[in-house]
Image (tube, rainbow, N blue to C red):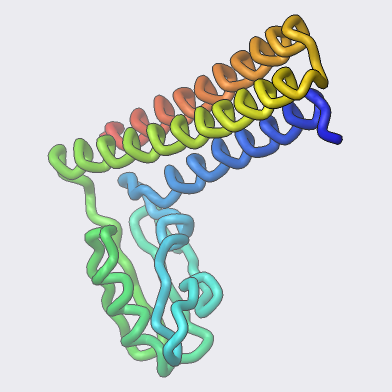
Length: 187
């Protein structure tokens, strides 16, 4: 039988995952600097299967505004280039047959604003995920009260604990957003 503590522990774990997922989304948003994490969302059609780029190639950052991608299978260089060009990163790869070079251009003011908007969207998705966890736990707590397994006082105490947990996790997402927006707007 699940107890209030079990529900709160589960909620904490799920909210932590939501914050972590939001952080990973933020890492894949391009700023003015090169980062291998930019390519985390890119999948390549590898013999009919969508395969993450990082499983198909070595990604290096030789200089602040350049990424290099060295495929393990050189015959896939065109497929990798195509996947990068079709992505929403807005980058133009060039290859020499063995290595793909990916110059990271300076961001325009307009592109910075678009990326900041995208980042805010990811943050809102993270907040919604955290709130959904809260909603689930509140529903379970109400069920426990309805079944007579816990009293109203325990439920109220648990609900305030869950609300505090929710506020803490939403605050973490807001802090991540603030840092990422500052990084994007930095010229």
